[in-house]
Image (cartoon, rainbow, N blue to C red):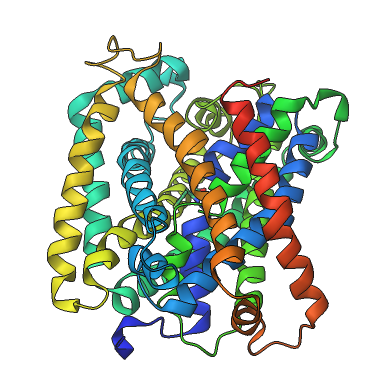
Length: 448
Ligand code: PFF
């Protein structure tokens, strides 16, 4: 039996924690640079459509599994499909989460390092020189980023060991509102720069001539990654939710908040990039190389840059909590006395797993597999193979293994929504979502 302590205390607490998992490097780091490289507004529009239709349907599917069984992933799949191999979706989710957190924490470490450098004013000092060179020298400085990587993991462990209510819910309840407020301050600053509108137009005016097959498929992967789907994280979080909350309303709030942040993120970044004549298609280093350059041109630049990095740190941490929680909940959901040990052993194990990713920008930079450094291989394996595979299996599992009536009961409880809505969702999860994922998957495997 779950104990009161094991549950989200409030509905808003659950929404902020789940939105915290969703909103992370995907929305604030990846989305702006991918949008920048893929020609702007058209990519963003396609991403929005996928998020609204496919992302929401999969989010509801994960919620239905978690809330119905109230169990951590492996046990949840076992309960719904006993004596079968379906629980491997849970195992796959745990492996994927450990891999994501292993490199996520490395980037978390970069953010911590940049944050302290920014506080000291050294990042926005005109003497800082070439930001590309600076970024390269920071991420190859093993001791500095190694310690920061460790600090990031320790913060994550300390919060997760506190439990759902006293750890994740409490801390997300502070970090998420702070993140929204900082974003609004930055967007106002950014939109009031001379020449800001050019950046807004780049971000929001779709130019479909730039859209190719790749763009569409990339937008699909990004939509799933940005909502933390496919790894059973949302199964885990909803297993701590009481039976009265309405799942459709919670899912809409989470998707709405994620989209809002994706929008704010573009509006905070592109106006600055255009106002200072920088290139939007800089790639992964966009926020580490272009943004310090933008801020160094502004009055109080180091204050704004520090705020931005703090926001990014909060976004990254709240996603990291969910990635560690899936591991911890697997062994500790029904045995609270195991939580502390599980958080420490799991977290430190994931830290060790991340060391090769951390070193791959320096000591191990010559160690190439498939022509790529270790960090990029892990990112590729997770984002393009394990995550879409997990999403596909969940989309097949739910309509197959949970009775239609049970699904309807679980999703529509406590809501005014009618059966038409349920039917649309059912068709989307049963047909549209798996077909879309299979297309994306085949493309990643280079079938056409
Ligand atoms: N949603 C997070 C982001 O956009 O940065 C990344 C993520 C977290 C993906 C948790 C998957 C996950 F299970």
